[in-house]
Image (cartoon, rainbow, N blue to C red; front, side):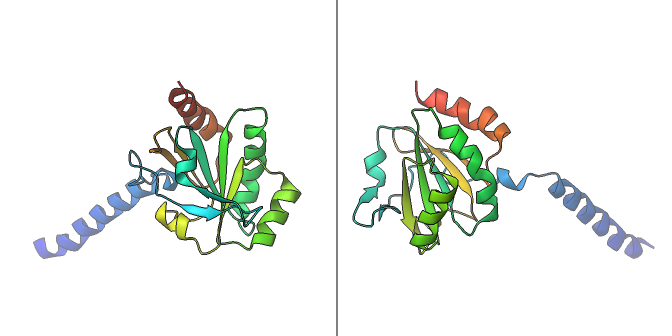
Length: 174
């Protein structure tokens, strides 16, 4: 009789763990980069292959890194929000064009608007890999010292901007 209860107890325990897991938000995956220096990079810009930007060029500024691609459906959903968010703000918003074709990325920005101060070109995804990108879009907030303070997985929402990104930017800009 006791042996017959073991599978039932295991099944109930597994069901409890699965039920708890369903309540978790996949956008809240903790990043090992939070509180650590942003990974170094040195790459050409999307618009001009002769112009190179590196992480240290951004030191002393609070900045946002938004990872995007022209082939990304969620990026298309997020993009109007980024365009509106960047409008009229003194904000350093850096795009990272991830695993994309240069011409496709440039055409996409020309068609939908360019909210970025600059857009970096990462055709092989090496910079994205260093930042631990799971998939696009992803967004990072980086402080004046070059430390990652926040990571958002998936398309930004008005709620995420209002409750997380904007307060953090205000705090870091003081």
